Amino acid sequence: MEVFVLETAKYKRVVLKLSGESLAGDQGFGINPAVVEDIAAQVKQVREHGIDVAIVVGGGNIWRGLAGSAKGMDRAAADYMGMMATVMNALALQDALEKIEVDTRVQTAIEMRQVAELYIRRKAIRHMEKGRVVIFGAGTGNPYFSTDTTAALRAAEIEADVILMAKKGTDGIYDRDPNKYKDAKKFEALAYIEILNKGLAVMDSTATSLCMDNKIPLVVFNIDDHKNIVRAALGENIGTTVGGNV
Image 1 (tube, rainbow, N blue to C red):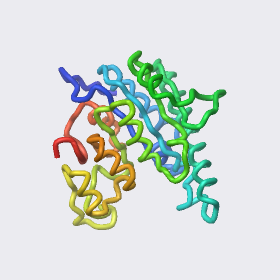
Image 2: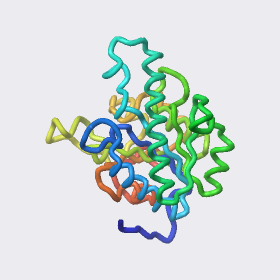
Image 3: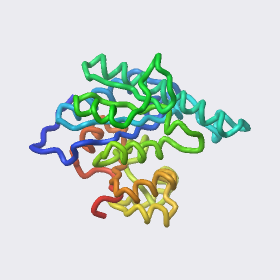
Image 4: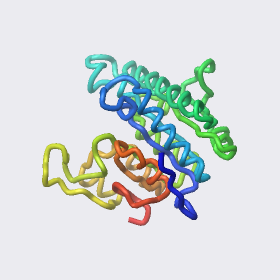
């Protein structure tokens, strides 16, 4: 894989937000080992540039929640099942990273000592200071909150410089679905208040408000390009930037 070299990286600490679907690849469900290995290789490159990396991963490749698999279920029960799915994905990512000698820790918001550490803010920061990648599983530990909100919350807690939101099938934020409308307009930059006012489906409103209140920039980019995680982490102008100096 090609290595990108810049004199100075734009960010010192990033939160990479991965959807569960991004781990499934073209198969659409489950965990695709080749895709996970490719993501791990890119994360290793980011670490080699001296950037602290934390990852928040969704679980939609295993459990879709009320919109899919859990139709008719109690909301809290369905959300807890989704949290378990994110832990499965976190462990798969950890395995892929450690196979290529990237020291990694999984921290979960729900205690499960046999498989992962319990999330402790100071411990997570210390891991990153020692050069380890930290993967946050089990969402916030509470039902009714998405992994988008988890990414915003953890980014604020660990004082990350940016959230890198990797999207499958789209290269940024559009005014409407580019897969349905050929004349859809892509935004190069947006303010968080515009996302709320325009009702753009980037992240849920709780996550958007949390990022806006804490002035955390967001970069939305296409994960289908196998170099984009590195490019986004190094500060290249790809996708759509939200917040920051907008």
